[in-house]
Length: 112
Image 1 (cartoon, one colour):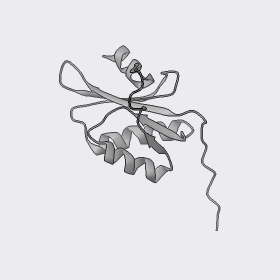
Image 2 (cartoon, helix red, strand yellow):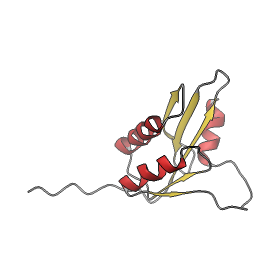
Image 3 (spheres, rainbow, N blue to C red):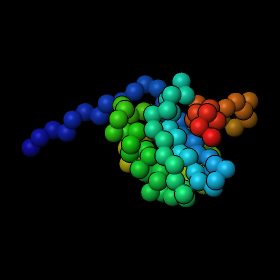
């Protein structure tokens, strides 16, 4: 019986955000803490499948984070399930903290 390969992890977390564009599409983006885009996807509707595929793209190309921070999402429960399956802790920014654009939000600003 073969032993599964160890999962590569990064010490830094990832950030996920999504926004609608002027033409009614959505952009989903995942960044590192430097606002470097790890992956992004443009979709017509925001679906659980799109979030799963976007996170899977990032996981396939980069060491897994210990946590994924999401400011807001109507599909937060879906993201929680996806993260649980991959051993990633899903977090939200601290409530009451001074709101500054997070890394994913900064990347979205550059893309839209």
